[in-house]
Image (cartoon, rainbow over all chains, first blue to last red; front, top):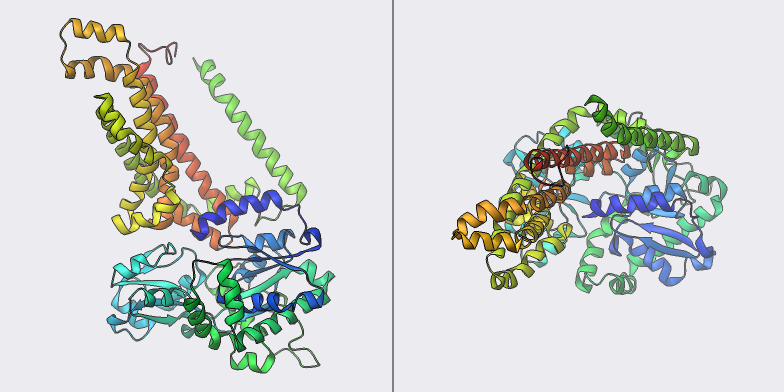
Length: 324
Length: 255
């Protein structure tokens, strides 16, 4: 139902676009989902005062269905969370938003199947057939269609409920590795997940974005924001419990055990070798170039984007080092 | 006659042309981002260039809407006849008929997929659920409002319940039924599109995909097609109403 809400929220954004990003001196940050471990470092930074100590009065807003890119572009919020492919798409449509921090170095999206089917890869699944529940318009579905032969799959929309998966042994569905598989296992299913990233399509995910205008006018503020997030994530990876407790108060639908499992599941996707070397949240020009090329090949953008303008080097790579 | 037709069609067309032109000029002048609000010309372009995507989707949504609306008409009228049969029945069941009006379709839509499976059946069910209540409510009001003098007349001549229903109550209720259908027609389109959000196919999936791809122009183009469907159904009901009522009912006389 994320999309349904998005339609309404889009209209709201249109009518509100005159508002500024720093209402009452606050720095608004729009999330695209409920408080869950994918925002762990953010809540840790809020909890420990990493933003406040840098003079950033960050205030979280948004949620499922929020049209984050539109809100950031219109200046309604100063920062937002989106996916890397959304950034490239938005820039192609003439929207000047820029990525400043990438939570997931490896994309956490995948396809979940029942382990009882004894499949060993995405190729295996698409050869076997069955139903595939995915959100219409997902770039990675276009990628899968191009990379594999999906003619044996019956493709249906994903409605953010795993009930159809639990009921149908032949159903495969899109997942965030930190969410649905944990839910399914706790409800008695035996799920298995194939990451999309392993098939060669690997956009950064849970990416913090800002407008090009803010980046040009307030580069120090943007750099401080990214630095605070980096501190927050360092803290969260070392001990997710305090931030999980805080998010649990805001998101009662998810219990403490699920928070714990999700935080553990995402750890290797956040702290990759690249992140260890260049800093949490850092991004590389090569990855953005490749994403732009792939989206161009899929026909989702009209022109291959200028990869360097899609993201900002906010200091993780500073100190004389050139961009990786 | 032609003059009259013109009088009928010209005002709404003029409003449409003026609003479209005004929107186009305003959006261009204010340089609104196409992601927030595309200009009408951009929407028209998307409707044209993406017709290979939109037309089959439109056809699919149309089919599901029509089946859902037909089911609403049939079952809604039958339900109203049942409810009108006695005050006791009405009291016992009418509160549950209201359920159809208040059910938040967006919330139950995912369940429809579980009950009916993915595909047109879930879509038709959604269109039916949101469009049946206006038919029931209006038909019931019509059946209840039969002139008591005429009722007495039928009783006086010893007419049975069947004759009374077919010759008096249903004709009497017909204008009410048609009003119910006018409301139901628009709702059925909404229901079908929400059904498609979860059940798949049609304009609903085009809207979801276009949202995800940040093609706001395509979203509006799909919404335009949905409006076209709603308007066509409304016109169809109006035509039926004219044909059925023009000989005898004040609401359509003089046409």
